[in-house]
Image (cartoon, rainbow, N blue to C red):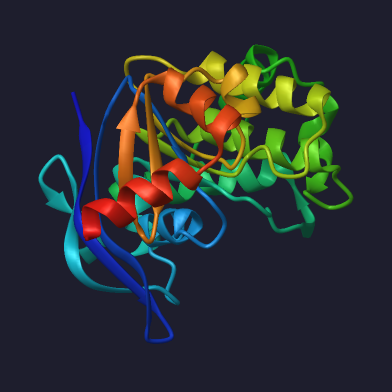
Length: 257
């Protein structure tokens, strides 16, 4: 069983420290949720894990089965099995969803074997239809330009389709519920649940407990001040929904004193 281990991670952006000693371990088959107020570094963690160049790691480690992820380029991290679903996916006019996904798959195959000629089109079409059926997506979706003119829900569903196609070992969902109405939230969550299993570890980053009504985490963590200050089970998210974060601020201040 693979595990992604974040150890005492410190990260800065433009010389301002955002993450201040964050530690977290995620194993395949587990669903973890990170919650916390705005500005605590939740999205910084997501982008750092995937290697965004604007984020500078000043100390700490991120290990994937003992291998240092921080020494890898973003494409190497993807091939190693780490996937990020963006909060605000970018539109790519002129590139269909199907062509984008086939290019991503073939890029991975060629990285492993430069002589690989790519996945044959019939095999790819069969695989893509199977994934879309599993996610209850209309097949015409594959012929649309990626995120071009997509609603918020469609953009997030396209991210989940990418996840289904690339089959990562660990998926980071950065505020997947952002901008979604209840119906879209349910559809996207059903897609995540369909992909969940013993070969996938999931890190869900969210502000709100409502997402966790659909995606059921075994572990809930609260970030404040750039680190995890509280961890627990699903009941912790319900407690936060009812009581907010003030009690944690007071507790953190008392511990610091």
